[in-house]
Amino acid sequence: QVRLMESGGGLVQAGGSLRLSCAASGNIFSSNVVRWYRQAPGKPRELVAAITSGGITNYADSVKGRFTISRDNAKNTVFLQMNSLKPEDTAVYYCNTNSGLVHYWGQGTQVTVSS
Image: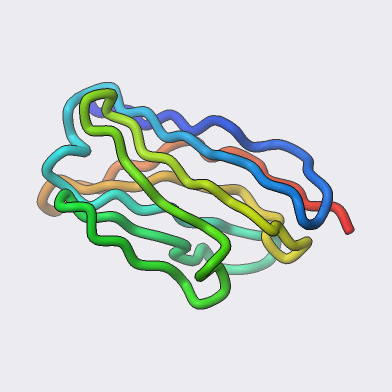
């Protein structure tokens, strides 16, 4: 059973930075796309960033230029560096990957940005 564990969330002032980590229990990241989603209260879950096994990245328009997704396959870990944080970035952030039709999710980590 694959397990994903996010960490690194917290409370930060606007303009600050956080680095989220997502660690997998097995070697699932090296051959699959890994994604970061977020969900704010009362809003649907939205895709924030994704990285392919080859390192190609994609970002939501709202975070382009501020967030950077990266991966360390040797450590089965994916990161989300978040800079210039805004209050509207406040949400629970989730890590996701899939193997075929089976999707795996972490439990989420709370990011709160104060104005």
